[in-house]
Length: 206
Image 1 (cartoon, rainbow, N blue to C red):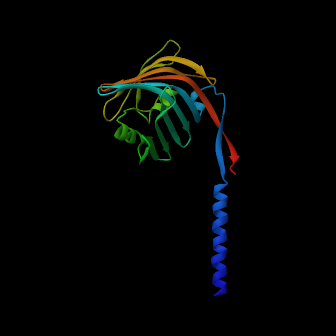
Image 2: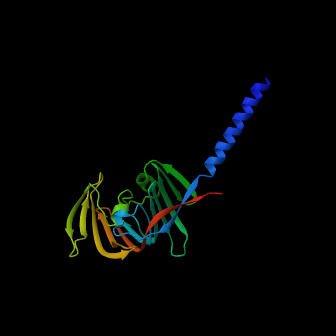
Image 3: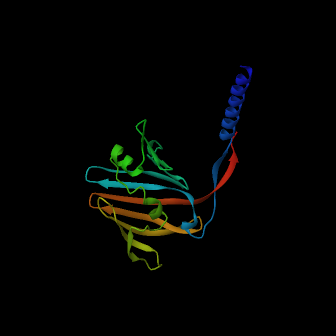
């Protein structure tokens, strides 16, 4: 009986030590970095503005987007800094915080549209924001500097038309400053005020 008690005690200690080890694993923080091309940045953040116009609604908010190797985080806030919504997508799971409630789904784009009614091509925006294209995008034209000016992106509901209105140099790379994204039922305008490439710096949690 004593031996069995010692075994249970030893197992409990091992579990505690394992838990302690997990809680002290390095947590990522990020620091600014310069890149020659936006495609070289696996992590980045932007601050800017977004306006969305549809047949049933029209609004404009401040935009914050954090892109990292595990997913994305989108925050929309008012001019006064009040949070409108926060949408996070990490390792195949999405969460949406809006009106004091949190909702979960596997698809961030469907979650956002289903709960808030906001239609944006969430899964494609990280590429377009940084001036890149996906395999479903057909480039229609380029500007005089050889940058994409307009493309058409295939979508299940309706194709998106993306116009890269202007470009700017941020964090060492050329990235879009103004984007217009539209299809029959919605028009989205994004203005990037700051785009910053980031590199992870591991720090041991306490």
